Image: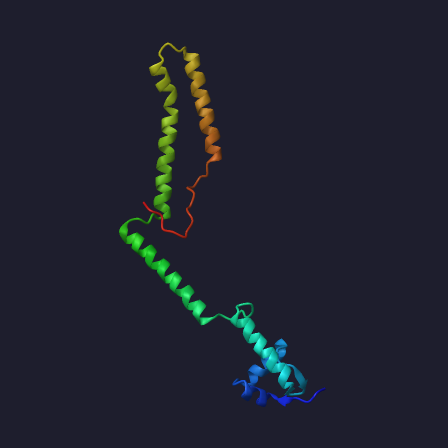
Length: 164
């Protein structure tokens, strides 16, 4: 193998710990020249390339403090928005939404079921058989609709508070 420099020399040159030198060697960034020896020029060149890749965001899974701080601020802002919406009374809880959904569905069902009687009242000349046919068709349409509808209300996307 070609002559190299000790890990301590490489570490001192790049202002890092010898343990970090060994870690970069395991990743293939620093080029080994033998036991505890590293090729200086290729190792420095690879290290500079690695730093460029990390800076460009194309490499490195380690959390960036700036990015992490930005994520934290976004979460904190979202939390404050939700708290403010709750205080303003513009935030609807899931149980409230479920209750409101149930009330709407019950109201629509009652209105639909009252149609045959309303037809009979407005059109008294209709024979009983025709009114009964209207009632059966109405019940059948209501039954088909209930099979198509979800049991629970559709939950809005959790990104924005739901206005009441």
